[in-house]
Amino acid sequence: MAPTEHIVSSFDRDLEGIQARIMRMGGLVEDAIAKAALAFESRDPELAREVRQGDAAIDALDDQINEEAARIIAQRQPIASDLRTVLSVFRISNNLERIGDYAKNIAKRSEAIMDQPPVNGTGASLRRMARQVELMLKDVLDAYIQHDADKARDVRERDLEVDQMYSALFREYLTFMMEDPRNITTCMHLHFMAKNIERMGDHATSIAEQVIYMVTGDAPDEERPKHTTVPTLGDGS
Image (cartoon, rainbow, N blue to C red):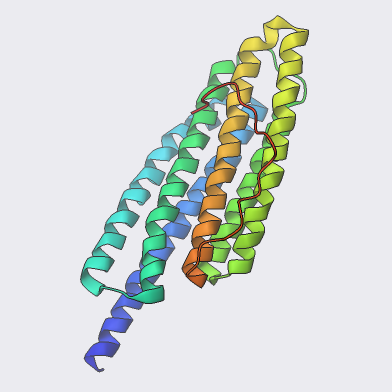
């Protein structure tokens, strides 16, 4: 085998390894989203604790991926599209880590209000919104592995639906609070949980934009689709 062939083969193996870690991390994050929403809807403290504790594995993978990507750049010195692929790893991993943090936040807030009377229909609504983001994340990770810019663009467009769902929930929570002041504490937690999910959608969209750049070499020209106003009661992080 010629030296250049050996280098290419080694780089490909390195790239496959780091992409496998990205997909492993993405699977853990998808699982965290689903479990955090289910923990709230089913009022399951054990499941909520599982989400919180599982965040450590996501953080550890983020560290491993960043270290491996830095090593590949230093040792292999990739160029052009190969360099874009490796650089994308840093940003995708960071976005996945942030989504995992938001899932952990949802689990924490679920535990805080499990002893409070439930507010009608809010569990199912939050879970639907979380499911939307979970599907966006699954599709954008598929787009990453398949180098499919069109699929990534589709995910980017779907963030508008998440914003619309969040705005509808925001108005619903305000109504519940005005109708009965006893709902205020619970609805404030619900609002921040919905806001966490909305931000998950933003991070999934950032991954989509990174995939588009990785595949085409160009960042999207058009503005990211956004709901006219995305209301908030404050920082839900």
